Image (cartoon, rainbow, N blue to C red; front, side, top):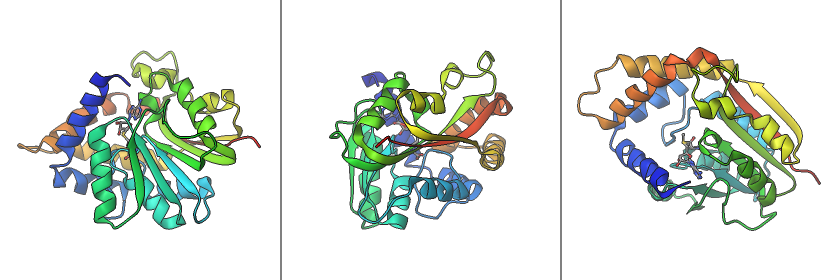
Length: 251
Ligand SMILES: C[S@@+](CC[C@H](N)C(=O)[O-])C[C@H]1O[C@@H](n2cnc3c(N)ncnc32)[C@H](O)[C@@H]1O
């Protein structure tokens, strides 16, 4: 990620941190536990699916790649008693993730790094979760290779994202037209690649955007940002699939 892109995310996270109304709206629609600070849009039931697919056992090392404010990773680590490492390109997101862990008295190692260049040792993690982040990677094929490099043989990866139903549909943002997570993982040598279209997640997400665009945000920057994003997303909402892709690193 370029310094300019990282600065964009830093600014985004700084605005989010001031909006309790945004947090309430997102948690209510996605049915998430009260303390979860997220910027992705995986609902509570989806997080259950992600957790099962990761096949973690206590003391495993879990990498939350593109961890944002760390909410999902902290929740999965608590449920499974895994040790959490979180990597994100935004220093502001990492700062908030560390504060979030401290507030919950949870041990976690959050660091600044790139999806395609985490700075972690080879074979050093047992599982990787990458929720709603891979579409931001300009070099996403390198991201799959990086996940393969850091995962131990037999380790699991779970990625969630949105992909265009028709890759020639020029109305859909370019990033989602080129994204093909299952293909990327296969090409990087992963086995047991499974792609699921999660229509029930989409129902919750759409309701969230519809409420966000209908509200008067007043001077709440978090709500205003959500409404702006909602208008863009709703324009092509029914032209993308909500996907969860899981895979195993070869032995
Ligand atoms: C939609 S947020 C999701 C964050 C988190 N996974 C969640 O669901 O709450 C996408 C995240 O990807 C991070 N990101 C985008 N491009 C990245 C890159 N090239 N390397 C590392 N992180 C990146 C952003 O900073 C942001 O925190």
